[in-house]
Each structure stands twice: as structure tokens, then as C-alpha cells.
Length: 215
Image (cartoon, rainbow, N blue to C red; front, side, top):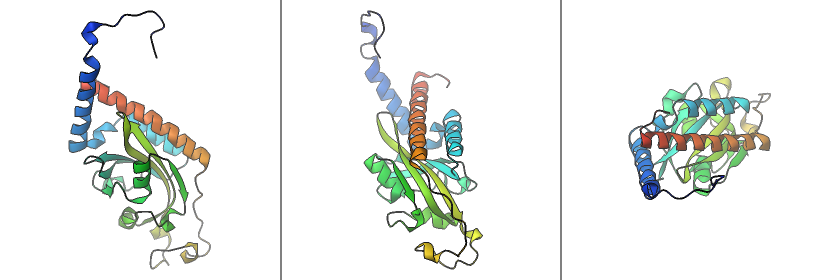
């Protein structure tokens, strides 16, 4: 937004924008290479946690792209199994619903995800869960899509003791089991807003690091 009064350019600041942008990108690359989770710590994580609770998601994750966008890594999660996969699970950026949202830049709202042919099931198998409903929203900061925010409603396999193999349809689930509700388009809109706010917070963090400010 331009200044609400006449202003002359300051020649001392002529090359500041370019140098500042380069320094912000240097800090982003260093974070991606060493500890990407530092981007989300504090206010970004608290804000995302509040947004997930507001839509009654069972849990949610912040995925950031690393290795020049080839891999997505969950750097934050607010569920009980977070320590088992955040920072360590690696999803090829072209795989799964999360990868599709990252590569396309389009948000998705899906139900019966555990039966979805496109879903990457490696994380579900590792955690002993079935992802039933899912929101996935692109995360834009530093000028482009650099990650994905996901919200899920899960079925935990320990609640289905009679299940001997991964179900391929509703018919394979034990009769009478109460299934989680799907997310609505209103929930999706709320998560898109949360992702926009999160992106601004991450931009602010990069700027604070680049300027040597505490944020």
C-alpha cells in the first residue's frame, strides 16, 4: 500500500530490497537444511493449533518442502504421535493428497481418504491409523508455495480389534462402528484463512531473522 502522503524515494535504500530478499532466502535455506521446525515454533504453532481445534480436527500437521521442493517433511503436529514422525517422515512431493496440493497449489477436502487410490498410506501404516477425513491447504510464504497444512479426522486401528487387514471399502469395516464426520467446505475455508495467516507469520519470522530482530 502506498504512503498516504507525497514521498520521495530514499537513494540510500535503493538496493536494500534486493539485499534484504537475498538474506531472507539465505535464512530460509539454512532453516530447511538444519532445523525447519524452527520456522513454526511459538506463535505460528499456537495459531495453527487453535485453528485446528476450531474446526474440531483430531490433529493436523505443517509440512515444509525441502531438497529444492522434492520432499515434504512434517515439521509440526499437534497429535499424540507427533514425536514419532515429525522431522523424520519424508513424503515425495509428487505423492499422496498432500503432494498433489503442494504441486498444484490447490486446496482439497476429502472424505474416506483411507480408500482413496491417490493417498500415500505409509504414515497411516506406521502409526496404526486410518485417515478418514482430510483437509489439505497450500502454504505460501517467501513468494511461493513452500508447504502444506493438513487437518485430519482419524480411525485408530486399536479401536477395531476385529480388523485383520487394511480395509478397502466401508464394507470391510466392522458393522456398527461410528465413523468420524467429514469436513465441510466451511472448514476448508477456515483452514485456507489459517494458512494465509500462518504464511504471513512465517514471512515475518524470516524478516526478523534477516534483520537480527527478536520476534
